[in-house]
Length: 75
Figure 1 (cartoon, rainbow, N blue to C red):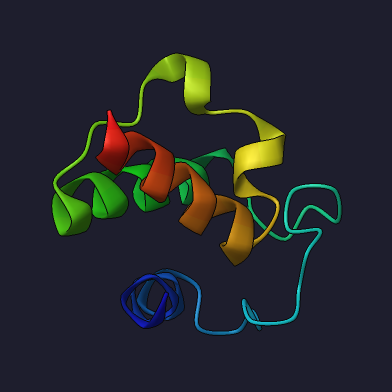
Figure 2 (cartoon, helix red, strand yellow):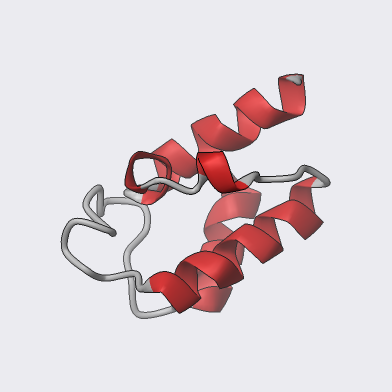
């Protein structure tokens, strides 16, 4: 989780990813941010986030992203 939080802070330093659980719902992340996050996660964790996984539920919080990473690492 620490690696993910560091990665997210590099992309959007003004957001508190540790406590915010409505990143998409509150429009704190836009589509460009999501593209940047997906690319960074793919590189950092050596996984491939597919188009079907790019849904608000998977990016509304750092915890949701962490769960997605875990799921994709198991596949």
